[in-house]
Length: 195
Image (cartoon, rainbow, N blue to C red):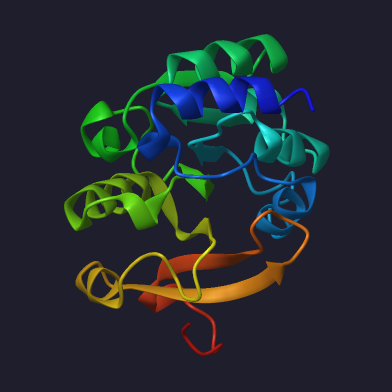
């Protein structure tokens, strides 16, 4: 319940930017963070909102100082700073990551994204992925959830950026039900079939 009021305030202010009908559930948070361990750090989280994925990452053993949150909304940024002391919070548009020089190239292990990619332009999606993969290690992964029936990153963009997406699971214990995709560089992908 404590997430509903800040979520509703942000939704009323800019529903297109929030692009969700309710905060993400703990079940979705467990699924999207299921492949991240305390040994796979530092971690970047994009669009943390009320911080349900942040809490799941900390519960998986990721230390606060190994976690950076990129949040464009000032209301959510303040809420996150109050809830998660010691976690680095950067208030900015995630599509500008590539120019921000927040990390050394290849220094991050994983990225967890709560961004509403389905409501974004191809140019913005490319900016987010290019910027993030510029910071990820060669074997790093980008985890993205979606309410839709397929990966929210169009196949043309995956191909252009030499990336591959694999669905790692679906949860019906979210409103609406959601799937999680793992996006990796083509040359680091496993033998699983693309989504």
